[in-house]
Image 1 (cartoon, helix red, strand yellow):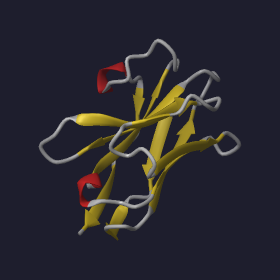
Image 2 (cartoon, rainbow, N blue to C red):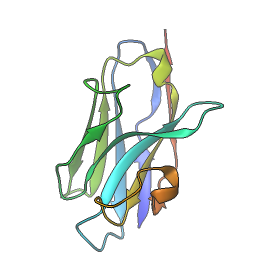
Image 3 (tube, rainbow, N blue to C red):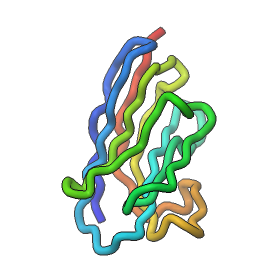
Image 4 (spheres, rainbow, N blue to C red):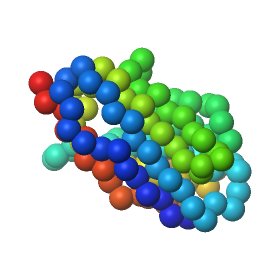
Length: 124
């Protein structure tokens, strides 16, 4: 599995960005997919996750109501729509896949595949 993330950039507080993660080499339907982020000097944290087949979405409290994870299976792409961005959302964002959604430890150590990060900078 190969993942290609894109869509990062610079935006003012209150603005929006949509991140994309194009996947290739998929061989099963029960993957779990997540978006993580890592701010300078901080650990990589889970932002949102969902089943590759759809549903079972989860959001970190810090982004609930502002971010939306979704996927387009016809394009093998996962999205993270980020609205009402805040300065504290500034980080490198990563998409990641795991072999199965349920029973997975949703930490960086639990992920099987990673895309390269894409930088999101929110200025206040």
